Image (cartoon, rainbow, N blue to C red; front, side, top):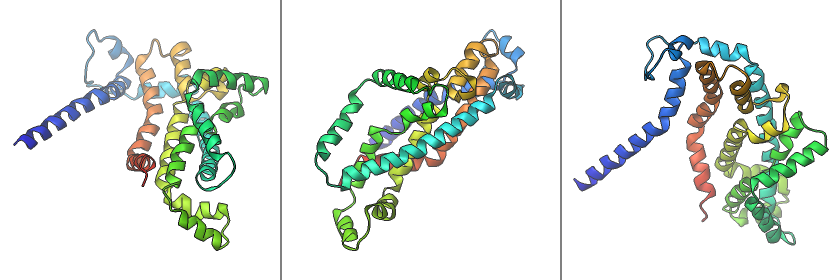
Length: 276
């Protein structure tokens, strides 16, 4: 009986927390389905709508170049994630398997970079990109995001769980380091690699500060600073339902991505954080 009561209490608290977390999403979708006139006529917010409409979604795509923001974000996300994965995989392999002088010192310096405030890094990156005349270019957007110390550390921990005997046996057979990495280590570390890829995609899709800082041309706006532009200079302040429709459209890809790969994300994080 005590165990049942505890179970009911736990599930009750989890259910309450789920309602608190999901309510903003419900309110966002509900508002996007309300007509402009109906929304403005509400003196007390209504928690349901009897006359849903998709007109706000049409407005979101026709009043601003939302499709262009989507395309820019897609290009930025794909290229940045692809380059970063190459850098992260090679760096993690070097720190986990290769032996070279000062490896531990270099890795400690890498980890120390995580302690530097992000604002200082942004200032340095901004000065560098500006001096290279790369503002309002995809190159300027992408370059500062092609590596991550945390992801290198996470993948290194996963690589180190693979027995050294496999590497030594492969070297005896004449297998090159790159072939061993491709044929042995990457398949074993697939859950962590999938997790890193998904987290990087989410990070790129939600990027706001750096794109907002380095671009002032709408041709290079991403969805995040595109939404800010809609709120400040578009219809966002006066047409809240259309604004919510744009936010829903932008949020859907990440929600679907997480729902599809949620088990792989959890497995990858658990694998990367456990040794032995």
